[in-house]
Image (cartoon, rainbow, N blue to C red; front, top):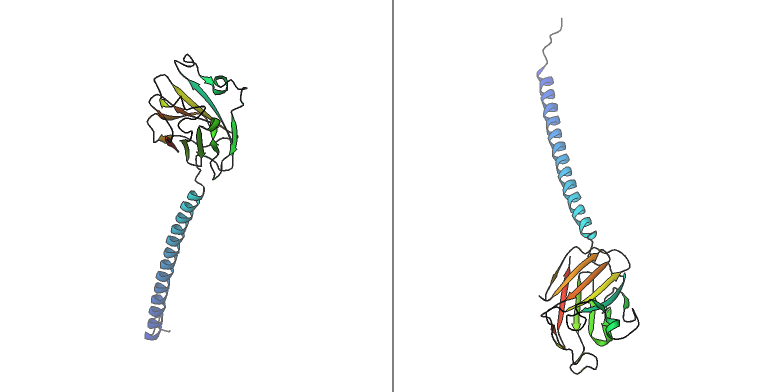
Amino acid sequence: MESSKQSPGHTIYFKTNVNFFKTLTMKTLKSISCYLILSLALSSFTSCDSDDDNTTLPITSGVSVTVANTFQSTTITSGVETAIEDLFMQPAGSLEVTATIENAVEFPAYLLGLYDIDIDQNTISFELVAQTGDATYGDLFRTLETGTFDRYYFTFDEPQNVSGFTSDNDYVTLRIDSNSVLVVEIGAGFNFNPGTSFTITLN
């Protein structure tokens, strides 16, 4: 009967193969682990990059917007919000202007030369460009009194993404009437004089 004991040569061969497979298995596991870590990192980076690309700005470039103005005063309009056309004795809607949101100033010298109004994807900016002695506004320059509201209605031709705002002027605020109508409201205490400017930052 043959002995069941393995020869020293067989033992060495067996141990060598076991060690080889152990080494191979460890290398394979390390490779798989590295691959998984790299894949997760790449996936996370791609996801963040994709999120950045898909960030929705408050205002969409290229859309159409129409501006209209109303004025309300306890002394001039008896506290009633009144279309500016009525005060200037102009046909209804004749002083409304429509523009496309782009890099240039959308409403230069709006309202018979009163304001430059610039809208971009994050801000709405006003600059009072009428000069001292202006034929229309020269006698109206002052600090706006209590009960006075000068409102600018911006109506967009499609929904926008404005959820809030900050203003760099304490006497100017923004009213969000809907996802397509924003109202800039200038109130009592505002310095209604040549060169005054303000910016509303949208979010």
